[in-house]
Image 1 (cartoon, rainbow, N blue to C red):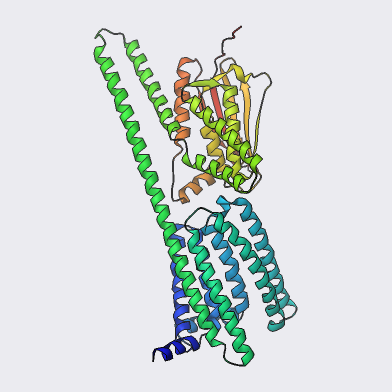
Image 2 (image 1 turned 90 degrees about the vertical axis):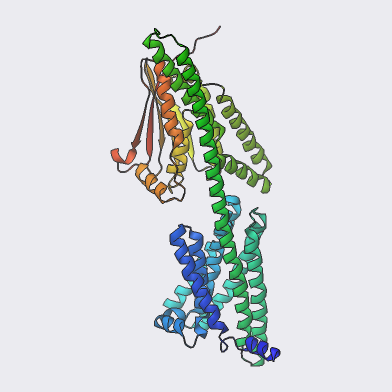
Length: 507
């Protein structure tokens, strides 16, 4: 009895309902992950939804009735191309796998190689389909032969794609590797059974039962992998929130401690103390608090910057580009030393600041494959070694230009520091980028799951204000959207007006 049930399940997947059951499950997965895409704004769900949808279409021709049959019957002109549906879901699978495992960020060179091969295959498929539509509509002679060539090309690309799967460090890779491997095993087995039954003149229906088991196993693992990925994102978000809370509590503790010290100082002062001394003490308190904020900000130097920099250097090591790895590792170490040194000094020369910014942009440029064209220009009458400014004043503005302006731009990326003007009282300095500009940048920020304020820029403005208290000229920060003055331009210009103080010459 058990044997007869197994034989019935194996031999008659169309008749016993296994086909309907499989397509129904694929339909549910398609709709569910399509909804998740709109909820999470993550294109990984959209790609997976498309993947399951075209698997469903590739097998729809075997349906003989039911809800899905009636629903799809209105679109027979689409369903009549099962080979094209198969080609599409293989192509979507590659896009989905690369995005799911974050290959573009982890192994950018491998990502570029795979994408070149994938676009070649897409171009070939489009050529065959257009040739069929416009020249020769004999399906078996055109689409079928084109599909055989496609199978060879996509198999070669699949073997190449597996190499970076094993290289990435994320545990999510095992869902992708095992799921894909199981589908390959069951697909090859199904194909072998199909060819054997076809040569013997028997019905090829049993071969599809094996294939559907492969679909089930693969998509169960892929769905579990997507769930695990969402869990890791939530854990990372919770950890970041906890670290932020701890940092805010530490800042509050420092603020209370300084406030208590000031209160004790106020109590110890004589009642007849001059109002000027009280105002001076209050100004000192404000300045010290601003420096404490700066110290707190430096102590939590952007962990993503450190991680991304080390990850890029790691990619050079993995690719056996030892010279590049050593070159950027030395620059990264030098930049970290400069950041640490700045915590001990409130001011630095403009020359030291510009050298540090060169290092910073050079390291950030690793993430953009050296696409950012960075330059420093200015009047020859300005001697940067003789001008003092607050330490790391420029870094938040450069970071904002890179990550909110240039990163979202598809055009040629340019970033410039220009020493615009030097008077007896102030230096005018400009930071110019040709990114997407302030309005588009604000809209992109609103669309993100994690929206953060530019704390670094606000703090730089406060520090410049306190720096100006000992000078006759007041420091100013102005942000201009270039498109408002010239519609043909894009980007942002930051204008910094900094009070100057010449360093004393030593002989």
